[in-house]
Length: 204
Image (cartoon, rainbow, N blue to C red; front, side, top):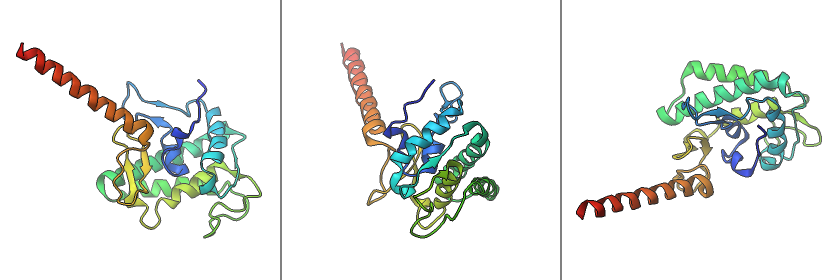
């Protein structure tokens, strides 16, 4: 099934987290699913990311013309990123074996880059040329290790996606207030009304 790569799908805050979140409802074997199950979606995701992650990418276009070929590297970076940083949010530290796997996966992604990347002002390189999606994904993922970024990572209280909390007081609960925040509020409102009705019924 073709995915609509709308803005909400890019609620992670950076390309690497958006990619990690292409697995929906992780850990739920009954309801969970992978939006990259059809590898052609990798190319469509990369195209959308060029728009929704333009600021992070420095305006550099992403190239994913052969999604089936690059899928093993992309999925390896995706899975090691989610495992490493999800655990870091929950445990407050990095598991060394997971960090090693993550760095190896990113290394394979970086190997696909042509030209220079990693500069202070242009971490994704020259915007005049396209960058391999797996290389951009690796650069974005590695950036999650820098500065105070790890302590700003969160797990959405509604959908369980990973996201970057850039709020002033680091108190965000939702990856996307307009979607997950409203859904959770609606759920709580429904539960309160249900409890009130049950209480009124019990008094009769």
